[in-house]
Amino acid sequence: MEIYANGNKLDITLENEKNVGDLFKSFEQECENNDATTVGIVVDGKNITAEEFDSVSMQELSAVEKIEFSVISQSDILAEFNDESKECDELSSQLTELSAKLQSGKDRESNVLISALAAFLDKFCHTVTVSSLFPEKFGTMKINGASIKEFFSDFSQVLNDFEQAIEVKDTILMGDLAEYEISPRLSSISEAIKEI
Image (cartoon, rainbow, N blue to C red; front, side, top):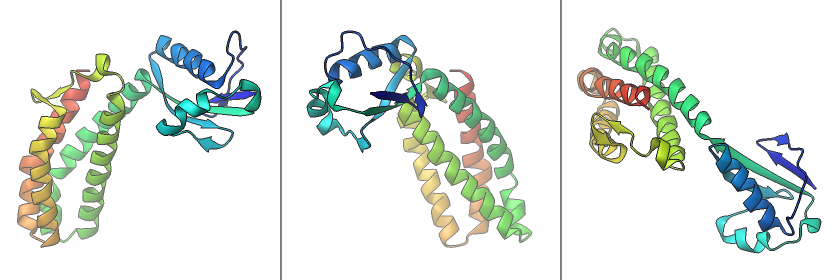
């Protein structure tokens, strides 16, 4: 049987594992020892869902040819947050110039910046979601003294207003929201990441 983690073939000697579930437990224990966790399992080319986990666990190891684990570690998440902090600072700075870009007819540059903001927020929210797998390390993260949920509850209204301003092409409101509402919040996100 072949075992892979994040696409890399592992050289593992099986000891007392009798079925697939025993292997899963051993692998997860090794992950825990290395501040990591399993986020996906593929057995013989089939993604294993939570509903299928128990039945697949009962299979004999001899009946399986290949198991692929997707693993994420605290250090992976920290590296992602660090990259996002730099991106955040850059976007925050650029958003203060959105009003001038809009007023001078630099629509293409403005659209690229708005798309970059949307992509960043999507990526950051994904990283936050994955970080919840390690509550002892990331569970106390605060942005401007608020929990992530509270922060985004407030921020989402600003983003909704921004989206509506884009739809009606209200360039003045777009510029004001970008400079005075969104940019400072991005700076707060960056500061929060740096405190992890």
